[in-house]
Image (cartoon, rainbow, N blue to C red):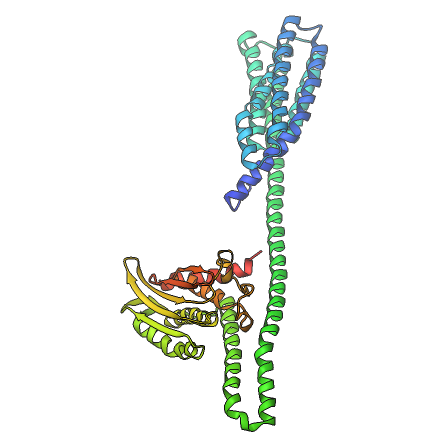
Length: 471
């Protein structure tokens, strides 16, 4: 009973890689099979020298040697141009030249014209033995590519069978010796045995290469996961170092103010606001930390609904105007009525982080919070007259823990505010644009494309998956 053919490989990439490796293995052994063929040509000529006309021997030998020369030229080209290349190039090269194997089989099968029923039984036996050995050798040499092996065996057997049937039927009119029929029967049996053996060996090769591909994929996956774990440890270490540095200042200030208040209680009116400010700084740091943890754990809960932009701007003005005024900054508002489909809590968090950054990095002048409507849809803008951001830093500021060097105010945070803004805006599908001039100020524009709840949930899950699989 024939064994089942191997199951189809899982992916197109795996299929192409396996096929290319099978072809690569066949081409690596092709030079050996060519040398064997060249070695057998003079043996055939020597065995039949006294039995066959020299012209027939010369013609067949010339065909065999010419074909061998073509195959050697093709293999030299393969070694020079194709061997170092990838799977697609190997498959294309093999598809162009695979006809050489059945042509070679036809030449060797036609050798039966020289000796079948035309030489002594001893010489016929030797020639049949050489042909059988060549066919069995092809099992090892060609079994990596089943179609080529079958084309070779079928051409070899059918050519020899055609010669024998012509001799027995057309020339001898079926009046030849009975051993002719036994030879034909043996040829048919031997042909089927070789095809079966070739199929089994091919299946072994294919399964080995499939396992090799999957093992390589597993090793790559384990390597990526190991690297991701190491990167996670590095990020956590970096985070703890940054957190320890950033949180130490407001906590230390709280300790000093508390000691000062204990020794001089009459200064309570002067120290209480400073204690409140230090407490707010600690709370702001922990708020950023909790936002980051929720983002990285995938526990952000989305509640997509219509958001009144004018009301959102008004609420943010009430929250951040006192902070701006405490720093001596103007806080202007321009609210255009409009509604947008989004998550009100996350949208407020995004704009709040932008306002907090604007206040932190603006020493004089002021800031503008605006909601606008245009042909491209609604948007929210946050303008400031602060220190600005140089072009070299404008892409980096959205990375976690990144702080622009030499910016005043960077000691007050983790460098997480804009990172959280970027993550949340990507989840909600609200692109954010930045324009800035160092020393003149910055504007952030949040384009409020309507948020699709399902797509937003998918983006949130993808964001967490990207962090987990990040190399």
